[in-house]
Image (cartoon, rainbow, N blue to C red; front, side, top):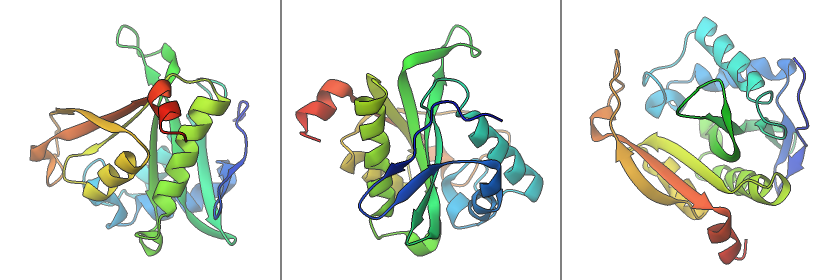
Length: 194
């Protein structure tokens, strides 16, 4: 697996390095944690096999559009979580990606919740998308009941644009309230003086 043009990034407290195969145990810690996965996918921890599949998907996120991908974050050498800038498939053909828009997301270990790390890493993702990669829009999605994630998106300047309802074979608890999409355009981000 070759990481394409993905730069190492940093913030005041975080060192963000491109995800590699050597980080699999870190991503699995998140995917197999019941607290972390409460508002993700099935609303339950992933099995080892599912967590390995997610790691492979995260690695592949660096192969669609140069510069996009997943970063693992470390604070004082300790693993905190991951942040992603993922390619968005076109509606006409899911094999073709929209070149100037990206979706960001993140997962953190519970011991780092409430300390500003999610926002710090997310702001760096938004900055990198606009300033370094020339993207024109960054979006984020989460379950409507995930207030912590929604607060991070709002703190990064993203605005709630719609609530939507998907059908799931095994719906996670709380999904009946829907899912939300947030967005920020480059012009809006520049106007914030970011």
